[in-house]
Every structure is written in structure tokens, then in C-alpha cells.
Length: 252
Ligand code: ADP
Ligand code: UDP
Image 1 (cartoon, rainbow, N blue to C red):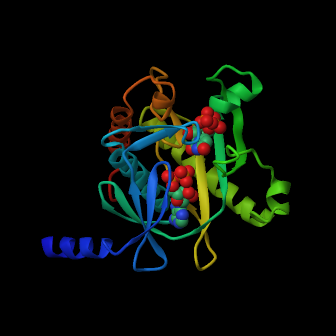
Image 2: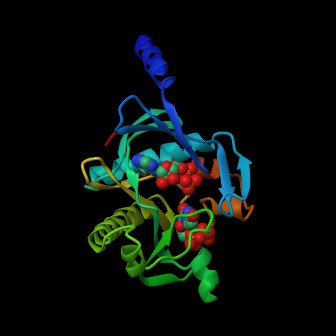
């Protein structure tokens, strides 16, 4: 076992850093279709303008995301996830990413509240679906379907397929988080295309890109504790992980 680990490590040393993002590094492995993702111990707000180090955050975010992606795959959602390599590393299928962020909202919060002058907290009559063009330089502007198609970012069919997956994810995760004592307020998903043309759910699902409120107290259990300076980020993520582990049997 130890020999295999050392051998694997030697291979990892040959990986090439492709991209350093706000929360993760993406490394090219020897297999052109496989990337190694490293979850970093850092959090950012205001599109990277505010940045801080949090020991243990990468490990917690990776553990949550791996658990959620496995759960989604077990329930028929195609994703990029291959396996967890270590506490803060995964192997994923390399994608050509759509530069889009798909936001689903179940409850009024964040920019949806400020944009329309609403108080946070009302449950929406139906999930609200919004797409943003992923660009740090432009501050991720809102983009509608005709602009997305006209700019050849994605076809109408691609968008329909990705929104269908978003709906399925919401239908699966809303009750799962509810069971774990958390309200799934909103979340952001990203998608990519594999070398065989298939569209899959990619990136991550962690409290970095969703809002979770404690069902009993309405306390924030996501990156808003950092954005709004409410509580310790790593402790909060560890609590989310513990609650999810209690309702999902790992490896199932
Ligand atoms: P950001 O780019 O927003 O700062 P991250 O730090 O999370 O975000 O960086 C991860 C980057 O890797 C994102 O740009 C994301 O779109 C991209 N990505 C996620 N999954 C894959 C994948 N399977 N293949 C290629 N790129 C991916
Ligand atoms: N979100 C994200 N990345 C972004 C913008 C938003 O992951 O670049 C997530 C955010 O964590 C929340 C949801 O998308 O769960 C809706 O975010 P909102 O538009 O309200 O913006 P925010 O207030 O988070 O800036």
C-alpha cells in the first residue's frame, strides 16, 4: 500500500499546473482527459478582491463536494468526478468548460434580494433560474438565453440540457439538505463538455457556492459567514460535512 502511494506521488510530481483559481488549482495529469484538482485553504469574496487563508478549509470543501457529487452520480446525474485522491485532492474528467454560472434560488437572498429591494428569507413560489457570464474582469454579468446563443457560448439545446440537470440537482439536494437540518437557499453550478461531447456537471458543490441556512435557527452555514464576518469558516464547513455524513452513507 505504502509503495503504491509513493509511486502515485512520484506521478503527481510530473503533473503540470494549468490554472490557479480563487479556491482551487487544476493540474494536468499524464492522462490528457484527467485533471487533478487541489482545494486550497483560502476563501475569497468580491470576485477575489478580498482573500484570506483558512487552515482546513480545502479539506472540508473537498469532502463536502466529493460527498455531494457521489450522491448526485448515485442518483443518475452525470458529473466530471472520478475519485478523491487525498483530503484536499480529487481526480476529475477534463472538460471544455462553458463560461457560465447557473444559479438556482429557492429562497430570497444575496444579490436577488438587493437587486429587487427585497428582505432575505421568503421562500420563492418557484425556483428562480439565472445564468451569468463567468468573467472576473466583468464581475460575472447576467446573461440571457438569446445572448448566450448569439455569442455562441452555448446552443439552445445545450442550455436546455444544463438547466434540466440544475432542476434535477435541486430536486435531489433540497430534500437531502433538509434532512440534514439545512435549507438549501440557492446554489451555483458549472458545466463542461467531455472529449466525447457529453455535457457533465463539473467544478464543485460546497458551501463556497451555495447558501445553507440552519433549519432551526436560520444561521448561515456557508461562505456568507466569511463574506459577512459572522463565524469561523472552517468550523462552519466542518459542521455541514458532519451533518451530511450523518444522512449520506459514504461510499454509497
Ligand atoms: P474560479 O475560476 O472561479 O476562481 P476555482 O478556484 O474553483 O474558481 O477554479 C477552478 C476552475 O476550474 C474554474 O474556472 C472551473 O470552471 C474550472 N473547472 C472545474 N471543473 C473542471 C473540469 N472538470 N475541467 C476543466 N476545468 C474545470
Ligand atoms: N455564487 C458563486 N459564485 C459567484 C457568484 C455566486 O458560487 O461568482 C453563488 C453564491 O454562493 C450563492 C449563489 O451563487 O449561493 C447566488 O449568489 P448571488 O447572485 O446572490 O451573489 P452573492 O450575493 O453570493 O455575491
